[in-house]
Length: 385
Ligand code: GTP
Image (cartoon, rainbow, N blue to C red; front, top):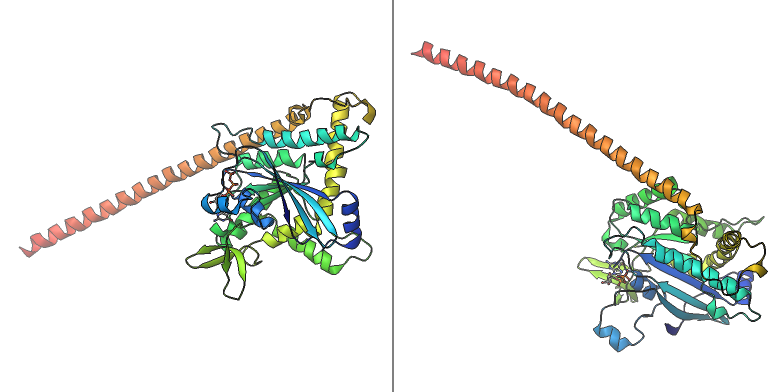
């Protein structure tokens, strides 16, 4: 575990929200997950403007970022004015390294469940220690920038996570897609998210009697940008306008991390650390943790908090029969997809056969015409002689 002090703006929190967050101890825990090599660690380092993983700059200069091989908890304190926020970042090993990736989501889901469980146990103690509260407030799910669509593994993993925590899908390494490809990719992802009923975290719209138009507009922009396209970089370059900025350098120019016309990094940072920090914390508390607690108590036949054994082993909710239904629905979806694909393939094969028949017909016609012309030529030649 690493502990570092970094300064990132959190003073934008409106006053009353600021007060609640600080009274609650100001803890924010986010998790990054997704396939291997998608830039998760780089993103975290970019977000906190430091190298959380390589505290020693000497070491960093000589070594590339190490591959994440186990769940890693990084701790930082964000400070601004009199406000201090403890941030925990949970970096997870990338999927895709195993021969069987079917259950890549299990480690993540188990980790989230275990934190809920551990917090429930903490609640029984006379003095709670906030350092043990690692309930995950936001899970950033990194999607490979293929430009095609979501893989079944992405769909399944996102579904599972969304039953436990606030899920925020992001398109990794978005600098590898053109603007047009990115727009189409975003649209496709949104369609799948909707069709599959994957619950993603959406910034709530201002429901006060006199909504603040600026807040409404910001929330609208965030919603429209989802899934956020991100670019991460620990390197900084001169942008030619007198500033040295985090960016990725290409022969044709810079992709600037904090430039809204290059990617959605700033929007995502705002959602995580500024405008929606409290929403993420409160919804984890009120929705996800409460749902876990309920299931856990129902599962153990308990009716109130007191009856939860203080040292009960973490029960894996992912083994709960309730999720069997979800799994079956998913299996059915995949079977239907395969069937539809087979049908499409058969249709395509039939089209080829039809086309071949048509071409054969055309060929016979052409051959007959050629034969006729040859005969005409021959008779003309005979007449000439
Ligand atoms: P695992 O630890 O294996 O899960 O990988 P990871 O997802 O943490 O990826 P990591 O941050 O280690 O980055 C992998 C490679 O991608 C590194 O060479 C990074 O420099 C590069 N990379 C990271 N972010 C970006 C990005 O936004 N765009 C591009 N083009 N490359 C990136």
